[in-house]
Length: 177
Length: 151
Image (cartoon, rainbow over all chains, first blue to last red; front, side, top):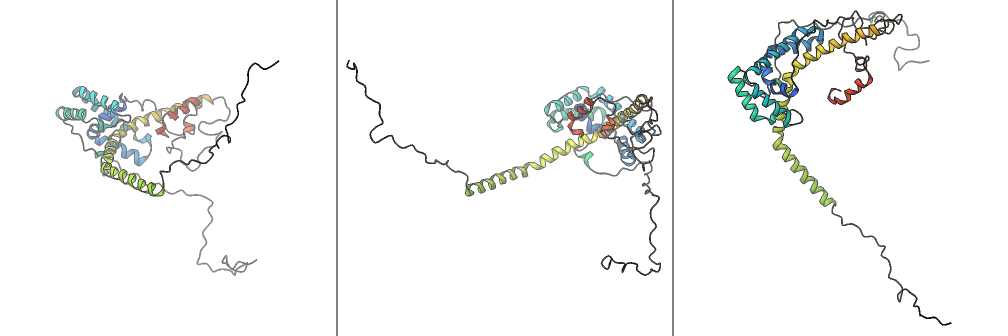
């Protein structure tokens, strides 16, 4: 390992967080509604992660995402448990790649339940694939300063008067031995 | 002493046996240039037509599945980051414990020699896979082959 003791790492207490105990099929089943209802937290976290490129600096935002997801899936469990369960089972068993387009019937039932009980509409099918601009409160990080090396040779001053050429000429073509 | 029976010798027919046929019998040739080229053109045209009428549907389907995957990525990345940082701390402690009796050993360096010279001390750097699995059994590393999409 290349990590020294000078390298700061968060303690186990700082990393303590209840995780989502769901499988891929269930996450895919609730994906679009989750993304819509936790859009603010998700954008904040992804922007932080992309700009700072450091998981240690985005722990607070990451915990906000997971807490939002936990509350979202708890709400789904209270209101639309059966519909969600059927939809997730369909996604799990209809294809080998969790293809959500093969489960339209169960999806319609789930969407109706979500919009009736929780008021969350399903976003358009390409909603999270489209580029968009997100304005965060966190200031943008400054660009890195270029490295400065020692022992670099000094640049030749072109305005200095030139001494007579020592070996016949200054061009490579007129170089004679 | 006379022979009791008469024997007739088995001989070739008159004029000898017929000649064996050694001449070449070539297979009937279906594929010539005047059949290959039209078949190629026809199959390509039909396939292109079928692709033209279904490609919108195929791409829409892929886009929708990508959308669902992208929507849960923040959740997955947040969980992955926490697991990664936990593992890094665990492995640094493990190395300190393992090498405590070796004189001159400093954790994260080779007897004081650092791996990166120009990088600042606290800049995040993801360890390579071999370093990340340094404290594990080799079997654990080879289990990665089962998760082909993580390479």
